[in-house]
Every structure is written in structure tokens, then in C-alpha cells.
Image 1: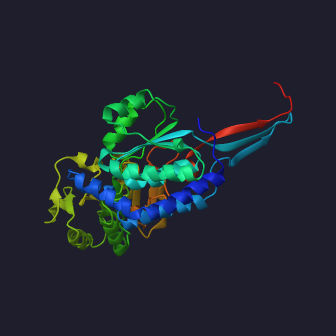
Image 2: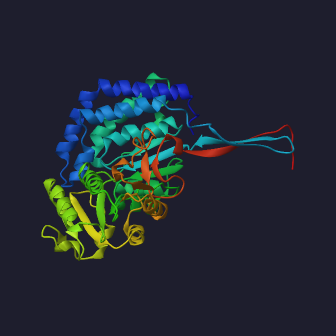
Image 3: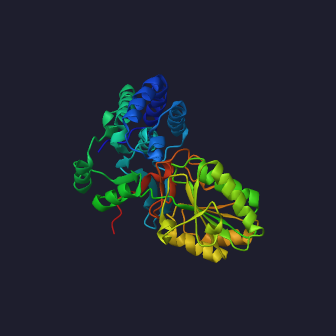
Length: 398
């Protein structure tokens, strides 16, 4: 186990990484071009996540710079207690030790997630996808350079070039200690990790997010929230896939017609239930299983629902436990919805696209957890720690 680096050293490495990313900007983008050209798949959201351009490099630099400015998450006192026998007891945050991050196609994770894990005192094992190998290896080379220049061991950041079989073997019988695994990617990857991992896993689960347009909704707010949630970034897990429209919404048909025409401007494929598929541009779907699906595509389902309670029940049955939003001017109805919908983030009159570490005040994020242990929603710097009891005595025995 690596000895915890001082916060000064950790911050210096992060700031050095920011400098190196700026210096090597052109090299990173040109190496990434080779990864993009070699990608033979037809998954547009995968391609979007794989791509590194100037704005992605800017985001990487901002991520490590911001991390360096944040308080040390390790050693923070959470609780203290003076025992009647005179012992002084503290509970403080502590790093996990070694965190393994398994991810697909996103070279920015090699910067941001590794940076969050490193700042919180952890050794990082990175297992990226083969489609982004060249980009990832270049970024890891910069991590090693930053560590070297600040007198720290390059062991703090390690890249695992494993195929699927080797990954499975490592998960089941790690050749080094692993304290926590964070898989970031599709449902198949997450299921694979959960099935084989011998240590705790934080699941960054599927999106499949819902917007419920309540009968007392402000219609222009509803349109803005749905269009933003669906079309701003289809590869994001916080995108909208399902819309429930209250059957008692005044002038409902006009609202649906306007929504259809706005979605069609972005070439979104629209599917609907028995009620909404009566509209010419909405196709009916064959099975209710579609309500479970996360699309990561220009595709949406619009259905009708008869009440807030029914909307809550439907979302709790089908959603991925990620994000949901109610559009209403009735605060009491919003409160009922927000307290009873079982998703990591609940919104009132706002877009689900804000479920993101940076947008929710955490700086960056390691992942967005749809589990309830030990952190739910975006996992920031302050969540990538466990805790430890410090007990000071002078000879007390029990």
C-alpha cells in the first residue's frame, strides 16, 4: 500500500497535470484522431464519448485545476466523543486505498476520474476500453510525468491493458489489493463487473429518465425541459427518454402537437402508447418493455397518465433510478412527487441534464451512482472516502 501523499504534493501533481495537458493539447487531439478513425462501430453515442477536441481538453484542464483548489477530503473530522474514562475518540474520513475504474470510450475519464481518486488519497487502476487505448495511454504517460516531476511514485496511477478474459480473472482474483471498483459504461459492462468482482462495486447505472407534465404545468417550461433533456446530449446518462403527460392537461392535444414538431426539428423518433400514438407522427410500440429501455439516441417515448400517483408508480417501476422531473405550478404536487419518486435526483421545473457533479456543486464527479450505498447520485471528491476511528488514551483498559 502506498503511503498517503501530503495534500501539498497531491495538489502539485494535479496542477502539473493541468500544465502538461495544455502543453500536449495538439498531441492528445491527434492521437485521439487515430482512435476515432480506427473505431468501426456504429454507436453514435460511443463515438461522441470517444472524441477529444479542444473543448474536451479544456474540460480536462479545468477538472484537475479545480480539484487542486478543493479542500482535502481525507482526515476530515465527522464525529468526536469524550469517553467517561477519559479517552478522546474521533471519526475521520480516510481514503479507500486502491480504486479500480472500468470505463468505455471516454478519455476524459482518464483525467477527471483518476484526478478525483488521486486527490482523495487513492491509488488508481484504470481499465479503459480498447477503442480509446491510444488516447488513454498518452494521458497516463502525462500522469506519470506529473508524478515524477513532483517526486511521487508513478504507482499511484496504473493503466491495465487487459482483454475481457484477463479483466474477469483480475476481478475474481486480483493480483494486487483492490478496495473499490467503479464501472462506468453500459448495462452489460456493469452486469459483468457485478457478477465477477470480489470487492465492493459502486454502480454508475443506466439513465432512462422521465419527465412528468402535470395538469398544472407551465407548458413552455415543459417544452424547454423536454427538448433540452432529449436533444442537448444524447450520449449522456442524464438525458430524457420518457415523457408522461397528464390526461387532464388543458389543451393537451395542442401541447402534444407542439412537442412533436419541436422534437421533429431534431429528427427525434417518437413512440407512444395507445393514447398518444393516435397522433400521425407518433408510432406505437409493441411491448411495455420499452419503458425500461435507455436509448442514448434520438428516440423518445411519450405516454399519457391520469394522475401524479400514477406517474410516481410508473417511474418507480421502469426508471433506472437516475433522474426524474415534474413540471407543475403546484408546489404541493411537486413535493409529493419529489418525496416519493425513487430516483437519485428529483427535479421540479428543471432539466434532468443537471444531474452532473459539476452542475450540482461537487466540482467534478467520478460517476453517478444509482445505488444507495454508500453514495447516491454524482460521486464527488468528498464521497470517494471511507472513514476510520481514531482513539487516544493513556492506558485505559476495559
